[in-house]
Image 1 (cartoon, rainbow, N blue to C red):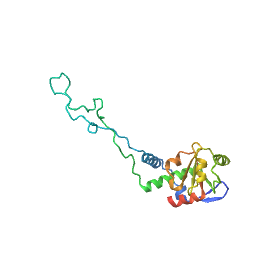
Image 2: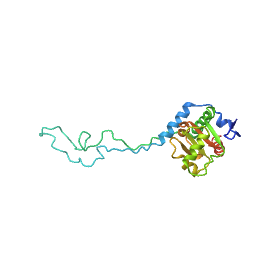
Image 3: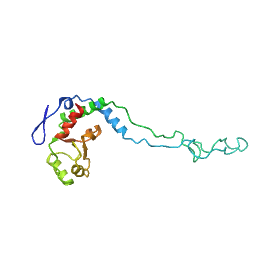
Image 4: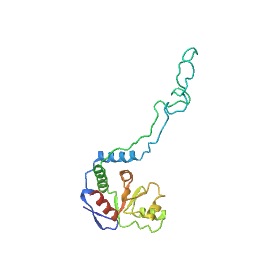
Length: 201
């Protein structure tokens, strides 16, 4: 299939990447897996065995009139351990590479169908100025809630876009399903399109 870029030139797109059926279940699975992998999972609390002290029996078993107690570090005591203490855990979910790539193809295909994928030859930002990036988006009649994608790291583009609310900049190597589905538009360079096709075809 062919798609015109902002200059009116036809860009050849691989049908296997940009004309795939939309698999909502798979896309949801990929998004959940990506977000779960970003969770730290470092929360930790102490059980009664982790709290220091409590080795000696607080008082005699009988004769004091108080309830029997074997340790002063039980969960019902002040300074005691937590009953169901949180432990460090891994939240990541397994997602096969084939499934991940298929989900990405599904997302890109849906972007093409909804006319949310905008191809440009070059962003044309020669200096790191936020105003220049805002003007570029305005000239393309795009909202500031856009994802900008280039083939390689572009420092000017990165610094020009980072102060714009909801605007995100990524290279092809750092593309992810969450960023692709959470923006109104995806503005991508022609060279980046080539890399995407090599990666997903």
